[in-house]
Length: 190
Image 1 (cartoon, one colour):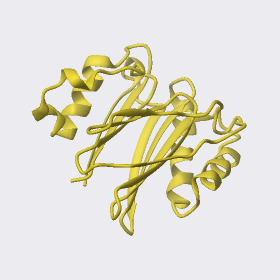
Image 2: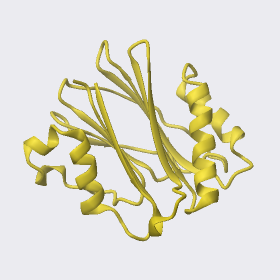
Image 3: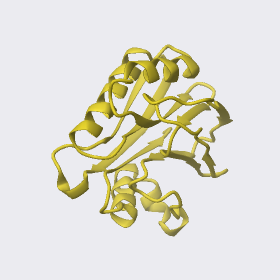
């Protein structure tokens, strides 16, 4: 398993409202992408509080995890959030998202995974949980809206697609907007 991340704050601020992290427990990998609303210190505060909540509730179902985080960060400005859980034993993926973070599987079967409307910490009506199988060579890529929704991975050569850290760096360089914070995470099984 390999995970790479890259981030850039708006105007090179010391605070970045776009945060991500990942954890592994009992062959379950949890990937989390957070975009605190706006940018700057208050956006970073919302994102970090959401990550802290997720890290302490990894055993919860995605429904409970999102609803608990929604309550826990209600005093902040809120955040968009997506979580992907990958079972490394059976190569299955479980995914849910609220707001405008983006997630895609890229490989044998490439697809964008949908997020539901709303704001974690500000409320949402429905959480759609998506389940899918991963092939051994699929990448899971998650990013914030500081990078456009449509990125063309087919334009990168196969060597770059096999180097997750360089791929994350290049996507941020090629697509990252200078008008917002931006963060990307790339996961490869092996």
